[in-house]
Amino acid sequence: MNFSKEEFEKRIKETKNAMTKNGIDILICTDPSNMYYLSGYDGWSFYVPQLIILNIDYTEPVWIGRKQDANGAKITTYLNEKNILGYPEKLIQYPPQHPFDFVSDFLKSKNWDNKSIGVEMDSYYYTAEIHYRLTSQCPNAKFRNAHLLVNWVRLIKSDAEIEYMKKASVLVQLGMQKAYDSIKPGIRQNEVAGNIQQALISGNDKMGGEYSGLTIILASGNAASAAHLTPSDKKFSNNEGTIIELGGVKNRYHCPMARTVYIGKPNDKIRETMKITNESVENAIKFTKPGNTANDVATAFWNVLEKYDVKKDSRAGYSIGIGYPPDWGEHTLSIRKNDMTELRPNVTYHLMAGMWMDTWGLEISESIRVTENGCELFCNFPRSLHLV
Image (cartoon, rainbow, N blue to C red; front, top):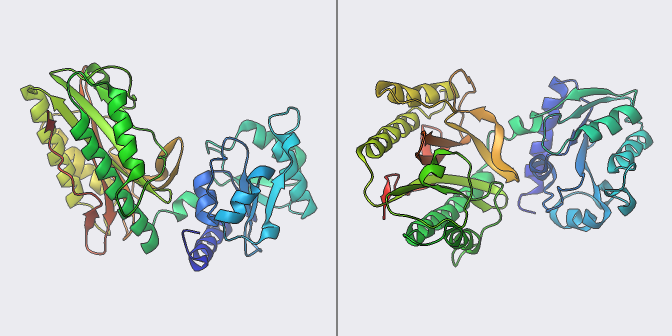
């Protein structure tokens, strides 16, 4: 386990408090980030239905997944073996049968099928078929939308979580430095991406990394005007900018960072936009402190852009921590105007200044921790436009 049993017990207690406030007796979590947070379960098994069930009156959650993944639950979680249940292989991808038939039967066997049951309605991993199976087979239950309930519990990190994010920050800086060292005219993007991935995973002589919830984002020239394009066979060319967004990962905790590389001599528009963007980021950092809100940070960021008449429609950041594919965001706090989420010590977020124009783009970002008196950056890596 990557955390003490005491830490898991604290998480369970806080989650149960949230359940009580929302009138939920039974919580079903299918989001692997929330499964990991509450139980420690960590395996690449989220491509089939899996879940944990937390009963407001029980000490431990129950893990339910594919039978062949049950040993993974025994290895990675703190759960008593009696609370690790594997459904049979005959339910895997064999319609009309479905793994949540097993889950429904389990709820009935415990007389939990007439309770108030919270489900993560908008989770990537909670499908329409899953909801149909539960609601049709447990007609006496009262289903409530518990989407993001656990995510909000995760907003304030423990000291142990912060330490993993600090380790992830070392990894992401190794990856970005490898990008800087590898990008040259005539080199293929995917060759550079391979070098980056090697650095992110192999790490240094003290530790290695893991796969990221979001893949490497890397695009050059016109493609840099789009936010989420990935490396291709295209070769780097003179007089083109390249946006790079990476995540270092340690024990599933992410530290993202974005930077921009330019081969050749950038024009005045690019240089000026980079200068303005950096000023916006610095102002946002200045307003990142306890008692302020996400709105305060966003206002500080956009005040600079508006001063120079620079437009940016997308949000400028989001809460980060645990991540599984397809992303590393927590889906709670956003750095946007009118988000009144209060910043408190050990809130962590990704300040993401992506400036995507008609035919070019640039990105700079910082992963940030709110401290008792202000904030600190996880990384110490130059934000200036890197020239090749």
